[in-house]
Length: 203
Image (cartoon, rainbow, N blue to C red; front, side):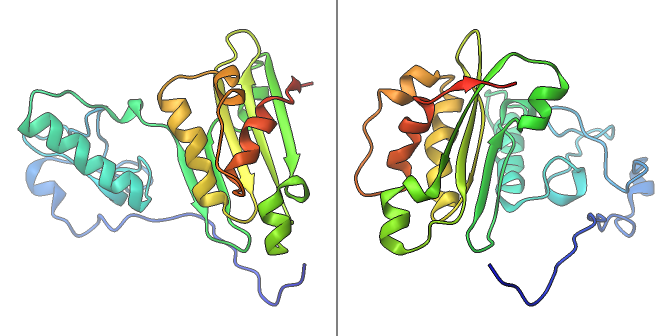
């Protein structure tokens, strides 16, 4: 691969310094975010903080989910919490990079016994058909329960294919469930069951 420019992203600074928070007794944390609890309530009565200003995601999809959480808690009897959502993101590079759940580094850090499956995009028929075979798929599974811990896909269609794993993780399904699923051919997602069927101990 060849490139012409390098983009270095070193973080974000929330635009919260001119909101007049002091008038309602709210303080920002050391990074400028407005502290919130698991339902996105601030310490000020009747005030919630959503989106980039609360430091709980800073993506469009997390910001919209913030709205859904607050709307459910304020307008209905449904109790929703930030901790119930899975961490996920996509980088719209070429090819795109998509991730959900835990990374291999996070699994290793906590010393969790896990299984890993890896599949290069050169083995994905749709990627070969399109002539875009750079990248790979990786899945992580709990060694005992076989529950899915996370997945990363770097390659053509990654930002769409990752949702196969996202839905399974929300349903608290296992690697075995994934291996038994039939997907449409020819798609990038059709190789995800194969990756779950090739698990090896993470060493």
